[in-house]
Amino acid sequence: MKIEAHKSLQKYNTFGIDVKAKHFVSVKSIAELKNVISLKKYPNHFILGGGSNILFTKDIDALVIHLNLKGISIEKETEDHLYIKAMAGENWHEFVLYCIKNNYGGIENLSLIPGNLGTTPIQNIGAYGVELKDVFYECEAFDLKTKTQKCFSKTDCEFGYRNSIFKNSAKDKYIITSVTLKLTKKNHRLNYSYGAITDQLKKENTDLNIKAISKAVINIRQSKIPNPKEIGNSGSFFKNPIINSRAFSQFQKQYPQAPFYKLSEEHYKVPAGWLIEQTGFKGKRFGDAGVHKNQALVLVNYGSATGLEILNLAKNIQEQVSKKFNITLEPEVNIL
Ligand SMILES: Cc1cc2nc3c(=O)[nH]c(=O)nc-3n(C[C@H](O)[C@H](O)[C@H](O)COP(=O)(O)OP(=O)(O)OC[C@H]3O[C@@H](n4cnc5c(N)ncnc54)[C@H](O)[C@@H]3O)c2cc1C
Image (cartoon, rainbow, N blue to C red):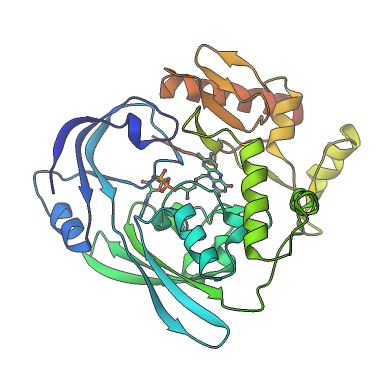
């Protein structure tokens, strides 16, 4: 375990922002994690997973702990299900592919989401009609106060849309060290209700199974979302706003052509990408910071944008959307 000083984090965040960590360490076991947390010389910590949901706007004046805990194990099996545990540093998409190869169903719609296992409960990752909570069983986390491991059940996690207890009352209090999912071994419940998946499956004309759904999702994502290895980004920068029925009926009167998704009698979700597009930001570039040409919800770093330049662009978008629609856009990305 080597603690480095003034380490560039450019390679450790998908926006490719060049900030420095005052100190940096990569930990490979819970024992190493506990050891490093107890070092009096480094009282402030920042936990880093895959760096795909972070916008760094300044150097990090702390010990950045890169969680590199690895391992996958089957905890329990029934005739229909298995409880599979993965350590926090496992790459999410590689884990999805591993599950598909072994015919474990439930996470195929979440293919190609960047980042690590340990971070998936924090914002209850979701895509194409499935959220982590649909397959989540429990997670283990290191309690920074008591210095012990604690188990969080699905109820404990208080999952919501891109939300959980780890973004609220448990924020910065725990380090998630492993996640256990309950997946199906047979009679998989396939979810292809999203129009784009159905279209893609028709195009590919293959049997309907978890592998075909994963492949369809990968193809759709590759055609829509820029690859962070080619152009720095953090996926959707903002959450899709959820508005109440009163605000929605006013909005719809003014913009009858606007797409929406009815969540309940009381709540409607409006695509943030559409709102941004209407304010003319899609494809716009300001220096090296910009809004992607095909996906208005994705802010990009064309090369050497600073985190502050991306943040200013995000603020500008929020202001214009608020002015035009009276709707507040909330960032999905963690801004530091
Ligand atoms: C191209 C692209 C597409 C994306 N598409 C989607 C999508 O479809 N759906 C979706 O939900 N998300 C999507 N995302 C967002 C992102 O992939 C997820 O939020 C992912 O779970 C972040 O994981 P990470 O390991 O990279 O987190 P990081 O960015 O490393 O960390 C995020 C936050 O969690 C904290 N943290 C990290 N690990 C731990 C831990 N073990 N314990 C406690 N705190 C921790 C960090 O301190 C930070 O505050 C996308 C991102 C990109 C770049």
